[in-house]
Image (tube, rainbow, N blue to C red; front, side, top):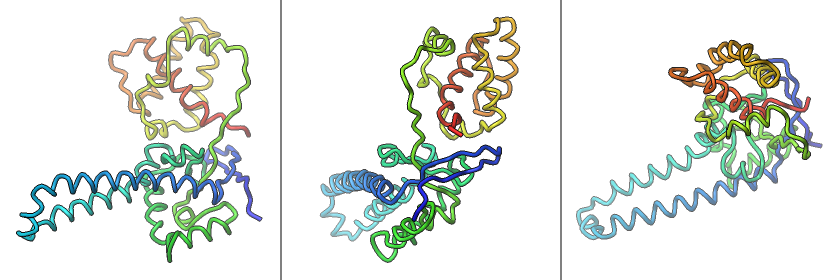
Length: 268
């Protein structure tokens, strides 16, 4: 019997429990991604023929249609092969299909997927899809205790269900009121997912402590804490401190806390 629950111990010695994504959810996510790729392929092919059809007759006569066709094939190959590698890396292990189904790829240590591990697991799709219709991959996912295909085994990754925290309606906390009064929204934070990966356990604990104490200390006490933490956190996520007021730094730190809260506040 395959195990649904997977226990992962992070390098920071935090034990986290995930639910491994099975064959059904992974197949459905893959079909959604393939449908998107088919649409893109068809649109590009139609555009190609629209552009070259007007003068295609002369090209055919000149036997020179091969080079634009080769360009089309190359572009389609790069899109179809690079879609999963790049999308998974920049979106924290989620492609469009995975986002819709509610699953994601992570590393075995619980951290977000790296570019190298994304490349390995997706490059080995070439083996997983042998001899046809992803036969090897399907068999391995079905038999493996953590529902892994060959790409996951070699790449050191695992596909898990998103951790969705059920939130009951409750009174707003002082911090939530403060964020609302400041008119802050996560969308205002101009930080990419790969930049957030630089924040590890130590920095997260400092950021969480700062946020939890934010409304309980005076401005005089808060300013040095804000400056000290900003000097540590902002360079990690590649944000420049130049010309930032103390209020700007406070807002950025609070938005970083809100952005990272769901990923770090695990139910242990």
